[in-house]
Length: 150
Image (cartoon, rainbow, N blue to C red; front, side, top):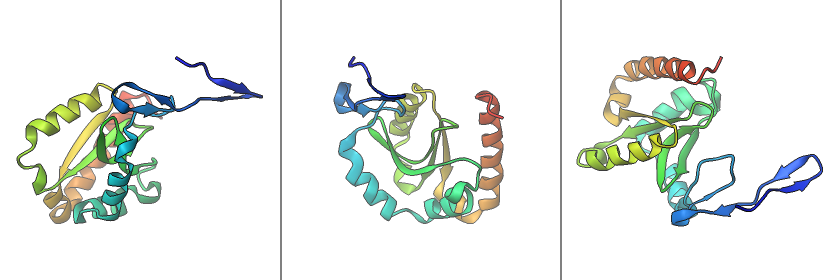
């Protein structure tokens, strides 16, 4: 591993190529830079459920935490990610109906990095948002306890 460059009181890390085409800057999880254009496209073409979830719960730190939309983690693009809580949120539309096995595999990979993955159904987000909001707030409390965050 290349040592950090030391400049004054700051330690600068170089972006390091990693296994399987992933890179990391040592502060974040590894990610595949080839997915940047796809993530940007997904951010610009969000589903109705993603827009509602973002605007009602996550935008402008309404939850008390910084969340990112369409974040690249490993070889995947997740709908929402909070680094402080190590929390991934997926709003699953009908495209996920026949991808249960793939989603389970992807969740196991993300969980191997210490992340928790929450799945919410797109139609439920749109039709019964109060239930989603209540569950989300409870899950945030649980996650804070797990990570000993005050």
